[in-house]
View 1 (cartoon, one colour):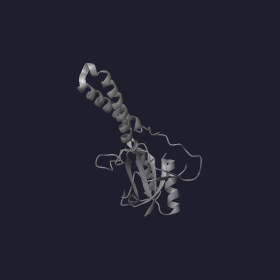
View 2 (tube, rainbow, N blue to C red):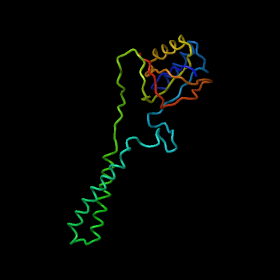
View 3 (cartoon, rainbow, N blue to C red):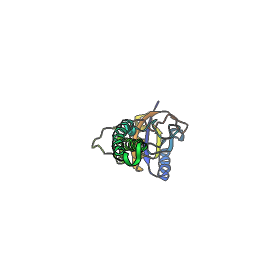
View 4 (cartoon, helix red, strand yellow):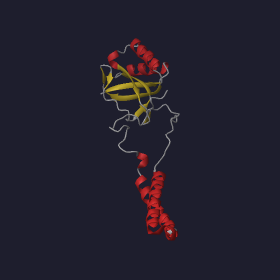
Length: 192
């Protein structure tokens, strides 16, 4: 495992300039790589797409559907009883079924967590590294820097070229490829 210093950029042109500056600072092309990191949730780690096997926001949808079906079925049954002289026994069953279906749909939707992800990370006012699992999308420039002097140089070059979210990671970066990059791994951000 090596120490990898990486910075995020919004444009490919910026990344190309940083690669050139890192080469001028003594890093070889084998020690660097650049690639695009997709937005959270769009990493296609599963055959159906996405990052997780199931939506964490839908965790309680089944319970909500069951509760809604009970309430909706009771309301539908009451409506069917009230309409029994007009629609007959078949209307009673239909009203209860429609009420149960509508209630289950409403209950599932209410129990589904529709949390909006705040795209802006709250900056901590500290000089300490910050760990987060919120890696933003963008062009990532990564460089292997095992020695402290190389790490300092890489961080300086990334900062001077406007990198955001400069991170320090452990991994295998050789032959211009970060072979064990994990977009969902916890990121240690370097304050700047």
